[in-house]
Length: 112
Length: 111
Image: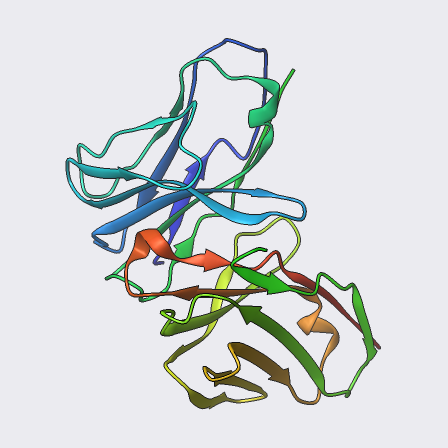
């Protein structure tokens, strides 16, 4: 089944404790993105990758890092999480630009 | 002013009703328009994809784009309880890093 897989689905952590959310897609898509979804604000792009080793900042990149060492994987790293990063996070992939994304099921992160 | 405006609802309709969901936008350079459906505790799912102006129909769903008015719509005919979800509009100039989403409209279809 073609899909984007994120882990974990739920995560509660403390301020300052480094964490990684994994994302993997099995569709051989070149384009991958991370979004956060907050009530009233919709989906906002955090980081974006056009291909292996090519990443770019989205609208809200502060406090986040990404890497794209393999085509299928695009992990999101929070080096020192803060409470304002409490949100619902989605990884997504796309066959080509502006084609529309396939989204993962989401990771609900709470930072206390 | 947000680049994409979408009425958050919530919108509640009886089964069988025609539903109209709408978004307005300010960037006249947008040329790719999408509608996503998001069920509770799930990721958004691409529902409709259109390029430039005009209509596109897929089963009970019709997407309309009016670039002159900077207005897009999604119509759902013969709505079903399974259509209950949040609907997100999205649009892009042509690059994956410039896609903009509306905040979503929550729809409930009552049996």
